[in-house]
Image 1 (cartoon, rainbow, N blue to C red):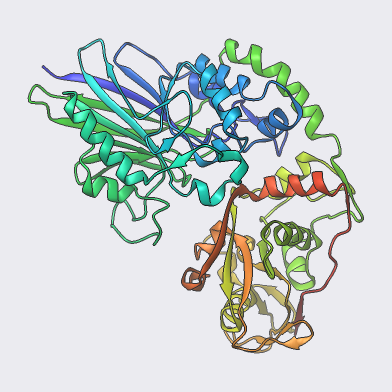
Image 2 (cartoon, helix red, strand yellow):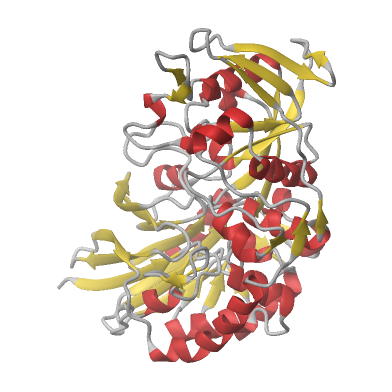
Length: 505
């Protein structure tokens, strides 16, 4: 007789508990509260989370920086949603081990993170027997890069071991327990494309493909990459991944037949627009306080940073971009900084608020520093120079390649630290006429460090050459959070007003 299991899985919620769009200050069909309205536990159900729960939204920024409640609120909400097992994401360590243990102590769900040692209220694996008799073996692991990203003081007393090896060892132990199927919750993603096997990353930050290939878990639930992946099967392991910020969740329907064969189908489901009253009673009073906080000025900028039209800001420079680069340079310690701007953005008044930040830096990116030289910088500048074309009168316009098939003003980059000049009268690919570093032409044999968002560092947007550059540093905080922290440290800000790019035409 077939026995069935339903899995509800979330990951990378990043503090988006409420159905709120903080940038636009309106209701959204997102958030844990709305997702939880879809959870139904009939006794043959697992409700699981893959980590990165505690950090990443204006709500949690306020919660952890301005209140004493801190982790007790996320734990209360997770309990209300009915979670049974979780693993930890790299960002869950951002507030230190003591605060993380406070969260885990208040949590009804068991924490399973087999490659973290020294953390209270954490186990390597568990076995759950369902009402239909199915014995399910469950473990969790997190990306082993946490010690490279996290502040040392936040992980004192903790030891992080190899994620793949921990998953392998847990599988061995689970099989000894005579379970009917095995589940691994992995706060990591895929180093190869789940369909083609094409290499996506050369590091072992993400090892989902390897786990599927070399271990025989029945189910691998992934996260960390913020990719929407549903209904994949890699070498017999059923796998999937929800996107970030509680916009969607995974429902997986699993069948174990009378011979013990396991099959599963997973789908991405929308959060929906229903908010249970039990969540509203907790969240609405808190969100009223958050709204007041994020609309209260955090600091003062010496000049309003109002957005120009995309073409005008590309031609003349953007003080908003200069400010973002200013933040990134301090956070990274790099020689140069590169940023891009969204197709549309709010900008900053002189009295800057949290809402200004989240509505102006809208990308869910982290910061990466790589090593570059003149040849790499020329390629980067040439790619951005291709943003322009000249009409018959010699007037600059936006190139059709940046408008179709989608509008992509965000693929024009602003670089601070070198003074460059491009000439639009020259052919595309040969428009860079000067790259100056410290008042001299940058020599070809001098290497510099340059920070940029993780999306760009991946080569996306026509910048594939960045993937060949040496990685110097990766920082796990989202750039929007780096901007908020910068304003907290520097309540009186003078924005860099250097004209880094000269456009000739």
